[in-house]
Amino acid sequence: MDGYPGPAGVLKAFSNAASATRAVADIHAALGGADSSCIVFFCSADHDLPVVAEAMSQAFADALVVGCSTAGEITPHGYGRGGITAVALPRRHFAAAAAPIESLSSFDLLQGHPLVSAARARLERAAPFPLEGNSFAFLLIDGLSRREEWVVSALSLALDDMPLFGGSAGDQLRFNRTHVYFDGAFRTDAAVLLLVATRCPFSVFHIEHFVSTDRKMVVTGAEPTERIVTEINGEPAGREYARMVGLDVGRLTPMIFATYPVVVRVGGVYYVRSIQKVNRDESLTFFCAIDEGIVLTVARGMDIVDNLEAAMADIRRHVGPPQIIIGCDCILRRLEVERKRLVGPVSALLAANNVVGFNTYGEQHNAMHVNQTLTGVAIGSPDGYGA
Image (cartoon, rainbow, N blue to C red; front, top):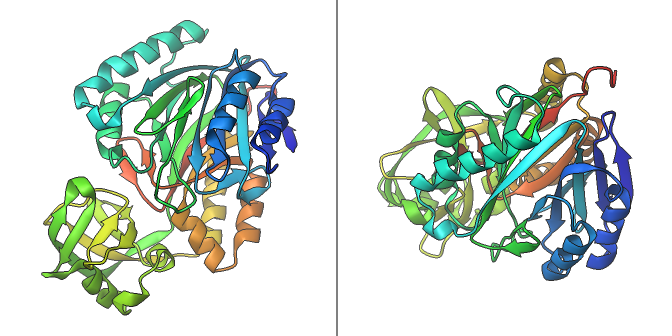
């Protein structure tokens, strides 16, 4: 168990205790004494989640707490697995309000505005300063719901200029059930939007380490609501994708998908669209919706360590030394890091920049649902704190 105070009272905690009750007790020992506006936690899907929920509900009965299950954790030491990691934002410098979505399967675009308006009104009552320019939104969402595009589009329209980032919950690559925690319980088919106001400098960001190549292919068959591409260039999708990256379809694995993602161009900017799996009929299931007629471009990776180091340097130029970065890091990035045996240097960079968060099944940045990126918010020190 570890607890780590930041310069403005931000607390980070991590426990890798095998017992769920012991792990929550460790988190409470590190965070429980703080006067927090909210607590955000990320929990391994290997834990007994109902036990975690009950323990969290009792340990933090008077606090606003949100969280989710993960495909891996980002702890104060870097990448971890099998534990619980958490952040507490102190009331002195932060105000927060949460807006749960309890049924993603029936979520309608028209629900976005009243949901955001109600949460914004609660945040305005809690924050002793104007929200404009001083607030951001954080979304945690069921990573197997296939509803991220709908939800993030609706919320972004309602949020106006308030920047949004987020992550899709994971379950250690089992792709069975993912969970979001709010109001004392883990839930599926659900999401929670957290609005945070602060006078600390902050920057909502996204990082990706791929550039497009000249290898292009057209989606000629798709089931967008299921995120399945059946045909590429008139051929079975898995077979044609494998040909484009120079492999046999039988060698397609999550590691290969992490190494050779595809990108789409939207508004002059390329966004990663990662593949989840190849199916028995050689169709491909994606982590994002893909429609017929979309042009996919095979991407080429840059050095992930150099890219991350440059991105962290840019963040420090914007907010100063971060007292905390809440990060949502795609599981495919982590698989690449592990395959290349770069866990040590990447973990060192994450720890040096106070990143705490989780490995996701997808990420959100403003109005986009994206893949194979690191999205997050970097929060600097308030005036008179830090170096």
